[in-house]
Image (cartoon, rainbow, N blue to C red):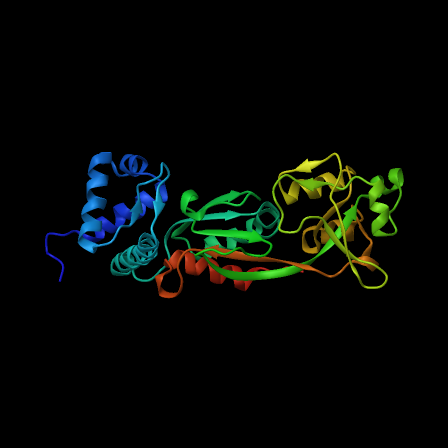
Length: 302
């Protein structure tokens, strides 16, 4: 049994802050403590547990396997404590600040149009929204939910699938008038294929030939953009050919601003979208659970 003078919740909170801040000194500044006090507290915690939580052999703070497990458990404990306090004070109604990070096309075309309805449904929640196609660290950015496209890598995060949609190659009629229309994937060698400035999970554009064999066309051109929405706008402006999710450009195709190309060679590969977050089940803050349920209920991707 723990001694009554041991503030275990305080120790957990300091340890979690150290991990999220990446160093004792950064955590100390955030907690308004001295680095020495933070270091001693972590040392006392390790001594009480009988396990090393943080490796001090490198310049960069690194967790031991025991530290990683304790951090995951600590997050759940702190979330449970916060939920218990909220429920005791105001019932189970979701409330508080919700930090959401979304890739740009989803944020612009799907999330922002839905947020007024979400905020009307949950008036005690405020939303802090950041749009970027760059991969982020939820811990470092202190985001509650990140919405990302493409296959998920290995991580301790939990994911809920929001949908998936096939990819399509598109260009503006003005571009095709000037440069001609590619009739086969090989014709793309003579065209400007616009690229993203970040690493994609697939290197090149995927097609199938007349025999059904997979064909990969490398992405080469004079245009590199930071996000999918900029890519769409560049394509509409006639800068080159793009490959994007069909839901992202469906309105442009219907309005004649973009033309779908090489559909006979489209392999039908689909790009999924997920909401990723820390924790699961009853350990989720009510505001996060409400937002995830709302997304699954409301988002349509086709």
